[in-house]
Length: 252
Ligand code: PEP
Image 1 (cartoon, rainbow, N blue to C red):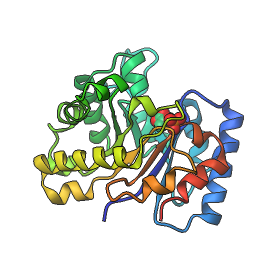
Image 2: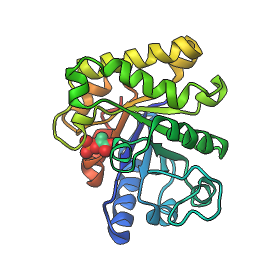
Image 3: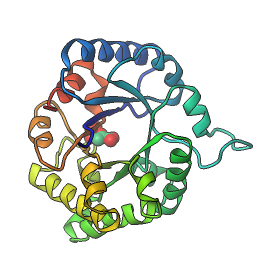
Image 4: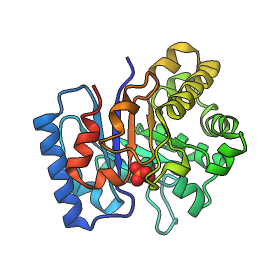
């Protein structure tokens, strides 16, 4: 049985005080109200990680939003996987479209980040997704399949088993426009088939594929009921405890 995971991507939001308050609220409400077997991940800015790790427990885990490809050394401003581990991190978001767009992250660079995260014993949440233009041009399936091929398919099946995929159509991120359940399910099924073609049905069936893109308490129940959607990567709605919890509770 594959794991259902709902991760909140705080992006560059919340000062320390606000972040600790949000993490505490989410942790408390998850404990009181969430009965399903879902894993909840808080992907905070780096400065919050150590503090938040002391405020969460049980189903709630800690995630980072990025890391560097090197183990240590003269890389001013970067953060290594060992540092993340020492802060209590379990997951690392890699290849978010904002990092691809604003920081020039390529599929090849992401393959290196995937390697270092897995070597360090953490789990990558690997983001993929197309722009509206790419969808309109009809190249979205090839493009997203290629993102997986180029950044992940060098992995052994054993290593790949630790990867979480997040399908995030770029046109749906932060826009209030969600993919329809048909569009999301269609892409998720295509990705699972692509994984099966490389690693076999067993690995593909066990792979968690999250949906991300303007997911909220209203649309989450329908999205999460799709057979190939195993939770969500949530941006805006993860910044308010009540909204985030209601998205989490959409997992049955
Ligand atoms: C995201 O940034 O990963 C995301 C899905 O954002 P939002 O939920 O705000 O669209």
